[in-house]
Image (cartoon, rainbow, N blue to C red):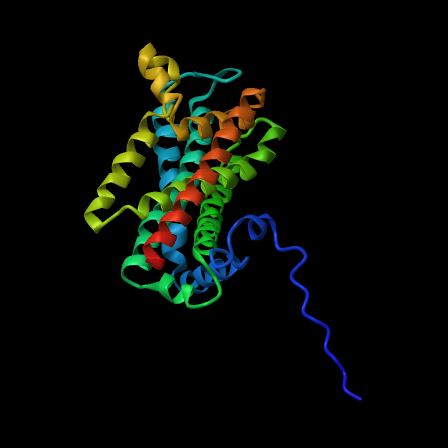
Length: 278
């Protein structure tokens, strides 16, 4: 008597992307890219964690050093100490830096020189797996920097509200958004010289997104420009959470990064698919 085997049923819980993305572009295994990045970087852990020290040095030199010359600064809920004003901005910057540099330089090297993604596409995985997996790894790296810096803020007494418990999830969202846009930008890079444009974009964001002084110091037309920049939204959101000033505007700030992440991943996946499959 022969026994017939039951047909293999498709995965019932494949996720939303498995239902809307054409087969061949997404296999539902972006975690494999995250695991690979972890295995590669665990031997170079010093290079990974070194990015945490930059915002710490800024906090010590400007927040506590220069801050001794500044009495108070106008914060979301009123006057605050200068260190408490600068710290959440540096927290947002650490999430941005931890994500965007790995998403740009790392992706370009893997794509252009190491040919990692050519090997990945020889498996059932597709371009969407690559885009989502790399974005998740950059999110984890940005979250690592943010968690460490948030611990420093707690140690120095720069957190005045229980709303700060939401600061780390917000940092993860910010890191994901910047990673997605960074990956999309990296697919348009042709050589290492093009990465000067990344620094040209990141440095002004860091300096002029109300990181070290309030928005009111700018003229009216420049205030409108600053309000459109992504780091400004991250700083306003985190500054409100750490000082206890939470309002409906925070939903708009969060929505900004949700849209930014979705658009960035979509563009990166489309560009990677075009570059790798043609």
